[in-house]
Length: 325
Ligand code: PEP
Ligand code: MG
Image (tube, rainbow, N blue to C red; front, side, top):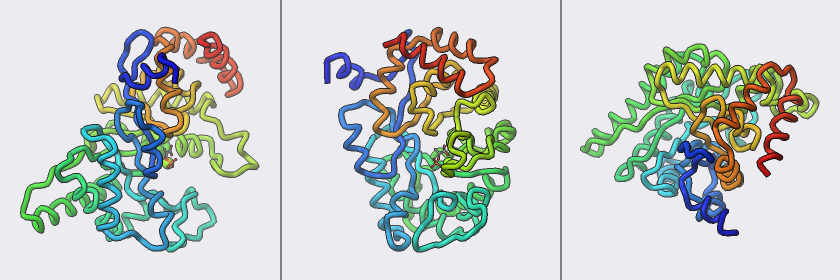
């Protein structure tokens, strides 16, 4: 690494005009911790717990989960680690828990499945809470939330797991912060209500794009229609940050676009300051942000505001990125 890159790797993330940013990683595999070794980051914005579940041949026990979660919490001591409860179904099958549906992405996935199987959720939350003892950096993130009732039920189960553990261990255990993924379009119109129930939001732009555009994110036949830079998706992302500011609730974004140069540029201009991305994108993202001022990003956002196609948006953004070098 040349010395400029080395400096960026070792410093906190900020823009060219010195605005502090939070950059964290998306992971589910311990191998990622090697990829980001030596690159300063602000924790794990999305720990996909389904990944360790998917590589096994049966549900991991509470103790197995406890050991995995301890390791994840230790990857960034004192930095927040957002562990998402099991998000299977849709494109993420468990070989030992088959779900057959005509429309899996509109079906029994994420929180919908685990609320129907509270025994799965309770074991998982117990393992997370136990791993957090003596660490204190756990945050719990709820996937595929669509309604207030689902959040209430999830909070009730988390509270139950917490109460039972405190009783069994005869000690007070810390309550983690709890967040909701904004990835089902209906949630973005319930930000006011939801912000009173939880501590933070994380925008899942991968699913949000799929559901806003009605395009299966994995169907090659319509892959050309799946685009985060569709003006309708950008407008939704703009609306989300505006509503979150209004309700003073922290929001981060953990979909793939948060690790892409064009996505970072546009999200920064909209007002996003917390980005979570694949480990492989972390250093590049820090570099780009360090070379970009808020004013430059805002001028691009203004330029694209009346554009009608994703391709126009991309072209303008690429032009600006080229000018940055
Ligand atoms: C998302 O939907 O944007 C997200 C980050 O979650 P996943 O890709 O795991 O569905
Ligand atoms: Mg998702």
